[in-house]
Image (tube, rainbow, N blue to C red; front, side):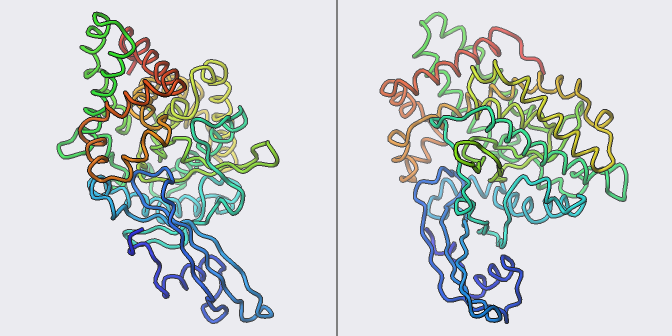
Length: 424
């Protein structure tokens, strides 16, 4: 990792002070160790684990070892760093976890202890965030090749409900009414990645996705059918920009914005999932809850699970959000009634499908097909901003599991967004 991610001695003391809630005079730092995570799944950060051993001066000189997760700007990869800088991704996450979430918790009855959605952040600077290392508490992420059960998806929906209801509660309890988060954080919550404004990387990213989708269409369909489908791909893909903006039709909330499996950490009791945390808020945005819900359903589940469970999962989400609002004296039937949530999810189903074809051809790739891209800045630049078709084609032809799953993603896109007119 670049040396910018290493905590200074003074910063280490600040982290310990906040983690243990002790005065500086009450402890000594005995040691600091840091280990780089070379393949942690993050495109917009460099990650490492830190271990700090501390002696408590007024507690029989007992020693404690604390564990932290460090997330730094990707300084060693200029193409990745450029995306972070162009989208203000680090600034957005720093503001989210410290300022926005801090205000949310201050508006909640018990400072958010009964409505957890993410982990504690103990220190930030413009190029670094220091979090609890949740892996030491037993939390872990699942990738798309791991088996998950219904309880995993239900817990994730409850975590989203906690985040979204905290956003609503903060707005509704603000002394100035009506109040919206964008009154305070319009720049932070503005969509800067998946935007069609000049200079935004989303334009390049979507154009690369269009190339990838057209390549996969050629691999799946006959020439005549493929040509007909490809003629409509760009117009449909461009809908993604509209669906990432705040809605003028539905209630908006603070949305996670990047709700993939690797950004959801689960705690288990044996084989049973019992708790969950959402991480990585670099793409936080202001949009209807359905933005997160449908992106989660299309990035974290498959078509079979959606067909069987999406109605139940949506009901769990709404019941949990409604409970949170009622506990804070608010009426969910006025703020986010069930019919409005259902209607918004029908509209944002299109976003879920578009996000699926944008990300899944990449995140479904096994490490053997993608690791060389992440390690080589020039290859990453080409993969991210020019053409990823060769990598995707290699995966499609040589990995039966990838081929089967990506084919389903493309076929659903064609069926729901090409053969039908998207409902937006």
